[in-house]
Image (tube, rainbow, N blue to C red):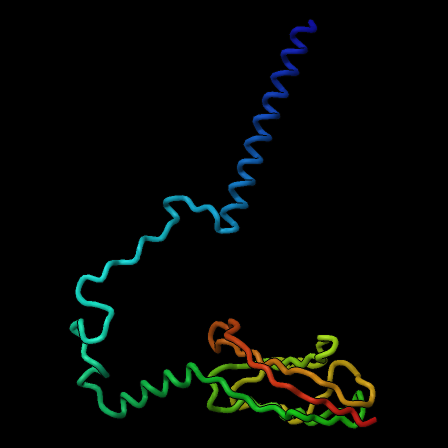
Amino acid sequence: MKRTETASRKKRLSVILALSVLAASALTISLLRWQGLLRFPWERSPPPAPIVAGNLFPGEGGADDGHLSNMTPEQILEQMQIAADAAYFSFKINARPVFENGKAKGNLGIENPSYNIYPMVVQIFLDDTDELIYDSGGILPDQHIDNAALTKALKAGSYNATAYLNAYDPDTKEFQGKQAAALIITVQN
């Protein structure tokens, strides 16, 4: 009777050990794949195609400089403007806003100009504590905020702060980048 119990116990331990090894292997493979350190052959991207008809160096291929020959000057200007608009992000903000007291509205003077294509969100942080003290919410091109109250009531004094102007894709709403502006916030009372 003891032999069958011992054999049964050994069999259970062998199964548990095999399952543990299998689980540890699966976990290791998953972690390596998640960190990008392991890829299966069918997941690899193909190597870049070789250059067959031409060269990457100017003057050595069959390409001519400039726009297509059938484009009008107006079409060329329109194409150039589209490229410039897509790469351009501008804003306006008052670098020295003043608040009568910690709960009053101040003259933030934030503008997302009409020539921008990107909606933006402005967030202001105190430099010494990195505390968020203002969040504008979305500001579309050709919108502005003249006056607004801070989300944290500040005591009288001057505060160094940084405004981060975050740009978003107008279609996908994905973050595109940000610019920073130094501010000196004055609370009078």
